[in-house]
Image: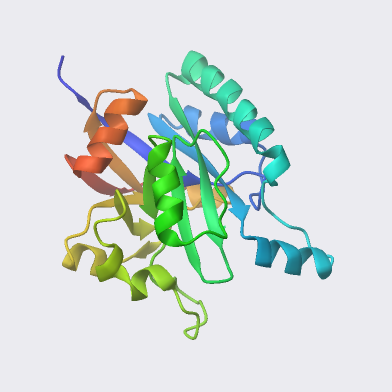
Length: 232
């Protein structure tokens, strides 16, 4: 059977972390727009930033460690519904977020909690131990961000170039040309937090529509294109 080009978004947040919409509304939005594959990737947060936010009385905006199993159960339930109602594949994920040292790593097809306080190398090892995909997300500064921020992954991209399965070459409205220039494996995502973010860069992947085939395509960087999804 010939593979199809799948419309994909692997970086999506809900109100279980810092997104504005509940997961069922997000699934319905993507499903109704004809997406083939999505990954919900709500934040899990390093202990330093977690403690700072709690001490300041701020919202943590992340899935807590003791709630992570419940989070996965919600995603598994929504994945079943997404397939039944929209023929859309939902891959459970998480954004392993270290705001203390400034690295954010997507874990796609995650199956258990991973401590964001760990080193980059140890986080990726634990992602791979779960047979999940590790993606360096928004590796360079995004538009409007403080130029003094130290984005650790890009500063060390030569060290980590082959550690990750893919790097985000596009994130929402931003294109990271340096990812292409360095010939790194890539995907494109929305970093969805609210409805308007649906219309942004996405990935097109020629693959069978199942989780293992999509993961293999990302690892092999095979038949992947980026696509700007616009309002019709």
